[in-house]
Structure formats: structure tokens, C-alpha cells
Length: 91
Image (cartoon, rainbow, N blue to C red; front, side, top):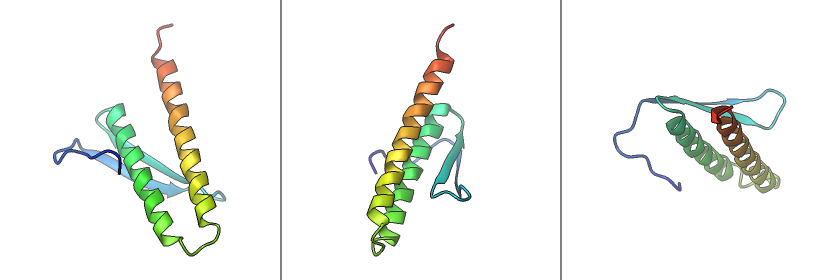
């Protein structure tokens, strides 16, 4: 894990749900601030990728699917940041 949460953290809620008919899992977090929620989502997604990777090591498609998920997760995080930056920009 690239970031560590301090021992005392803000209250948060983390969930992960599969998207029907898609090889995607939606990871969501609610917290007292948007930045904290983003951190929790990113850390949760990293742990999910690690768990799926350890479970699926025997599957010949596992590496490709894991890389595809990691790429999609990064792309989504960047898109959310751009959207949030745009929404916060003065008009």
C-alpha cells in the first residue's frame, strides 16, 4: 500500500459492489471530506486488486484482467478529479 492512514482516522464507510454483466467492481467511500473519501476509495481499490490477484494467480487470464482493472481504476480516478476540478472552477 502506497499510503498509510494514521491510527486515528475520520469516520468513513467503504463498500464494493459488482456491476451486473460487467467484469467491474464499483468501490465507493463516504467520509467527512471529499479528499478523505478519495483516499479511502484508492486504498480500498488497491487492496481489492491485491486480493483478486492473489486469488486468481492460477487463472491464465488473471494477469490481463488485473491489469485491465488497474488501468480502468486509474482512468476513472483521473476523470473524477478532472470533473471535480471543473465543478469547482470559477465560472
